[in-house]
Length: 299
Image (tube, rainbow, N blue to C red):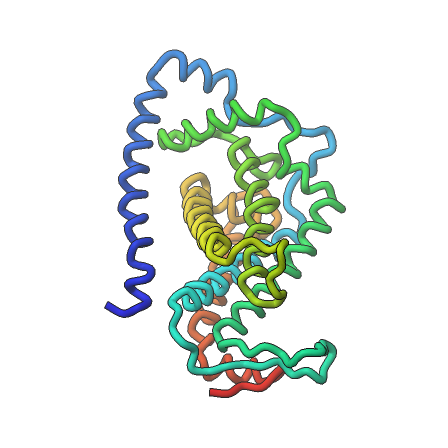
């Protein structure tokens, strides 16, 4: 078994453990829904939170594009992060040119080619995220992601029971998310994403450690946990998109329309093809040429 396999093999146990726990949760949820108290609770709290008066309806074009770009970047970010985590010594290194727009007093640091690609993708992801935050608050879309009343808690619990029992809650995501979606989407945007950014900065070496920086080992562990959260969130998110009405859900996010036409599915399929092409094309020979545009590449 290679060094990379030995390092990541313990994480593979999470897959069968997760499957067993999921099956157990489904059985418990289906049993619980037969209880009169739980049935009454779901009737009282069906899952929809209180809608703010000025909450927007639908998804604007910029959100559709940024959602697709975010998925594209995250795929490659996770791939390169996994490769960096293997701790294999890089065969090719990149050093930034120090005579361009960015100049530093000290000589630029040398990075492995995979680390350079990871940081470049991270930079694009952060730019996309900052723009997303600005537009989110400028257009009122933040109202779809931030709970404004405490009824979101019992409604989210109700939605969780409904999902686990495989009897999906009925709601229209074009108008509003259900309470569990609201909490998870909000957590992803406002907690998980900043954690990924700040732990990544600490590990990147872009800034020298000071007393304000936590130790590297717990930060690295947290960075990996955030990556696993994004993987788990994406798997569940995509699974539910297809299980609860694929055509309408994909139209919401990729076509900006609330119907069951095939446009959203076609756009989503095109995005998957683009992601597959990027995965195949991102070979060392190609990355070396790209890296050479902004620095020196040496083996």
